[in-house]
Image (cartoon, rainbow, N blue to C red; front, top):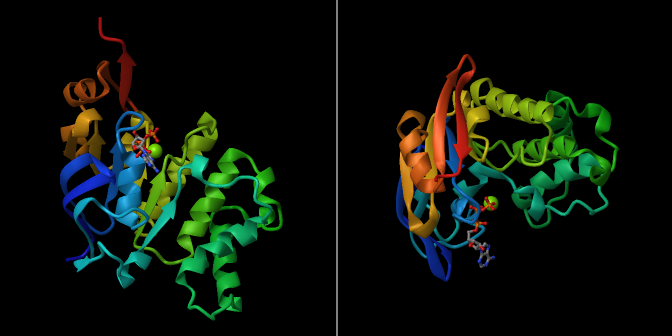
Length: 257
Ligand SMILES: Nc1ncnc2c1ncn2[C@@H]1O[C@H](COP(=O)(O)OP(=O)(O)OP(=O)(O)O)[C@@H](O)[C@H]1O
Ligand SMILES: [Mg+2]
């Protein structure tokens, strides 16, 4: 079966954070993972990508059991949560993008002209060509996210996982990043799975949602099924109101009294 299948998955570090999660992410869908801090969103992404082993259950990619490694992993790529990426490392923008090939190169294989061409292709597509020789660590947060997206694209993934790609980025840059992700989805046909707290900003682009809460609670379904006042209020333990605007629903949160 095409896509990514999670079968009765339990995730965590020794003790499970979420248990019994079964999800099928079809090719070319746009998923978001939402929920409060510490609910396990990054842990789930790392487990799907094989960075962390599951406690139990399976991760299948295109129908192949990848729970303990498989070739199909190369179809998934990752834009990590910014906190986990070393911003001080002295490397140029081009070096950072080229590093996207490293997990895919053979043991004695080195970078060739075709790798440079592809890296430059994606830098150009993302409007970053002029920054090629700049030090990554001196770029703005928004530019750094785009470079990390370019790095995720060079390996021809089928699915791109992005962990909070707009956190800490100003409103306009955040919008640009979300539009870029939408273009990669609609025009280039990549499947997207994105962790985000910005439900209102992404709503119009999203197909499906995994909502994680505390105590192992979770809900999976279409955005209409999951992103509503009732479920969000339950999971966030605050009152959530949905106001309908021309640009789509806006999610407002205030304390329950
Ligand atoms: N390496 C680790 N070892 C042990 N526990 C961890 C580790 N990383 C995260 N945790 C714990 O696992 C839980 C889930 O963390 P996770 O980073 O997945 O949350 P999150 O939903 O991504 O939160 P945020 O919105 O803050 O990014 C938290 O309680 C966290 O403290
Ligand atoms: Mg996280």
